[in-house]
Length: 166
Image 1 (tube, helix red, strand yellow):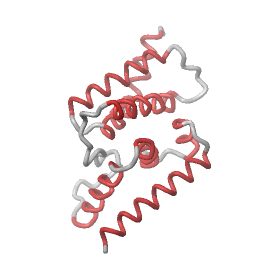
Image 2: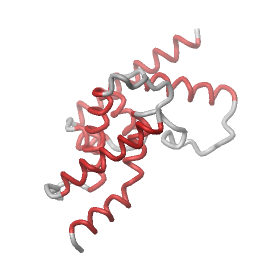
Image 3: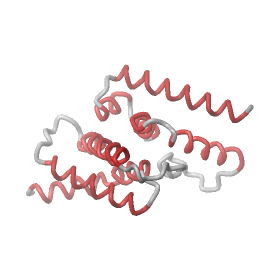
């Protein structure tokens, strides 16, 4: 299999990662398309230097998150997304979510959108049920640092939830 065919196969297998990250960082559909295109371009440019030391999915997460964060930072004209995570990113299967649960999901989405870019990326990976080790590999952090940062972010989110309940 030549490198183009291998790249396309890897891309096809892992395209969900790219779309989830784009959805998390861009609310506007046109900007999301631009971000997906930029991520794929960066993946292609980097494909020749892929060493195989980490899984393709880890490598894709790392590049896609870096591109998304840069894209987000460059976009001074971009609006602050009020609801960057879709329900399928949060792994919600019950489409008939009602009442307080739906309200809490809305608050969680808003609170996560308010986080710094790197904290948002950490929470995206955490909500994807990645292990601290995997998150560390993707983000270039130690497992301990990941655990500490996620605990801190959870504390911030808990505090925000408690402030709306009082």
